Length: 243
Image 1: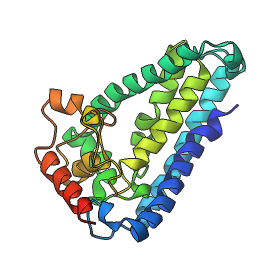
Image 2 (image 1 turned 45 degrees about the vertical axis):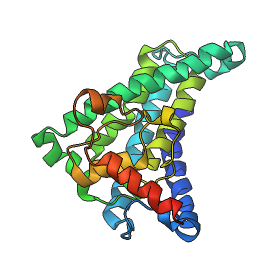
Image 3 (image 1 turned 120 degrees about the horizontal axis):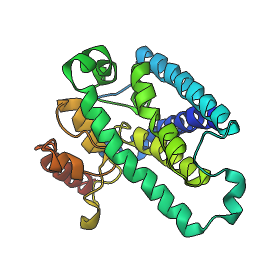
Image 4 (image 1 turned 135 degrees about the horizontal axis):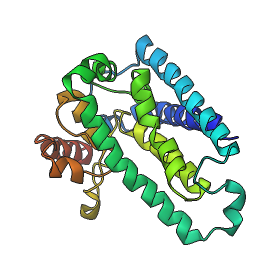
């Protein structure tokens, strides 16, 4: 019985981690900030974030009771000691790969005019996001966003520990994309395929670009990669070199 607290707990801890990190960066590395304007959270962002923590908890409880009933495909964490280490590592990457495609497709779906106006617009009220923006969305979107976890648990015969690791990583990366600071501007060339906070911040800024979460390949493949990204990234790098 861990999912009822793990889903909201990992999200909440991820938000707090970046709230604290942002305070440190504001004092010590202010030039890492993507948009120099203040990005304080609004009451609405707090309200929708905690509402979605409740949504996550309910879905987690549903997973717990489904696991007791034997409806989940994933292997119990009790069997972790018997699991092959490489199978565990591969399972984590399988989860990330499926989620990367799932996120891009559902995100594009949420930008259909009707769904954008009725559901996704709440998340887009922030054009200069902060850590509390990450989970500030309509509860329907909350179900869609966290829905990847039960989908993996119900359909893949993988270790429960792999899904736990994936869930924590997903939460951290979700908040990183909204933190407002670019921590990975000067990436090694081989890592350019991985998205940055700037990548997602430009989605909030321009709306019609940068729908992916982990990899840039889907945006590039489907023509939704921001034409302003490289120029903005270069400006950030130059700004930090001068600090």
